[in-house]
Image (tube, rainbow, N blue to C red; front, side):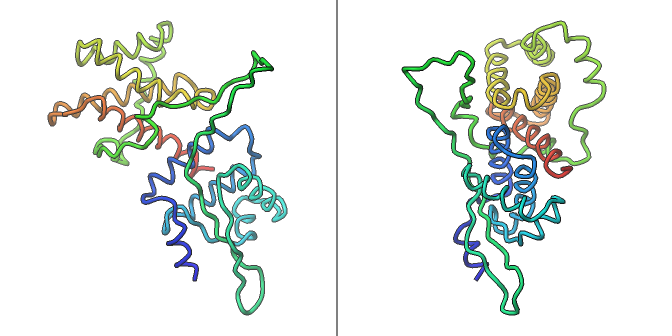
Length: 257
């Protein structure tokens, strides 16, 4: 019964799509979520791999995983449902009695577009950032270098270089790194635009220097790849590399929580 429902309600085709959606939910709703709700979402994500997006868990097991009282977990689940982050399906109870398990379906991320209030102005309001269409979906480009688990995401030597360049603007630092490989200002501006679009919605969540450092790793990976093979679309490859590096940053937070 559970398997049939899981297949019916699965919301993603790949685990990468699930992780991307969870990351977007966290970044865009973290200010509305309690710490327990964040922990519960991460637990559900870890158990929603077999049927991607669908987790089958008892409340007591979730409570044990996040080290909270079951009533606190129930409230956290209710909040996640209200925020349209998850959907809670029918509870199933075993024939021999006891607490049954619920089916939780993690939803795809859908940006919320709020209409502006024409009568009331609020200069302190911060509008929800909207990503450009070409960076909304995870790239399907295969990046061998990024998938290597033995590769350190950001070398210590890069940090030293970043410290020397902190007096410069992020763009000039970015431009200098691209310029070390190719003198093409048009290409540089396109790559920088991709970097800005992919990181704009997570500013404030991660340190700006860290995000810039990740972009430098993406630059190095991309142009090192051009030495091994001819890339038809350098900007597309860079977009894929950067997206995977940002996913790694998120995965570290997710699985170390």
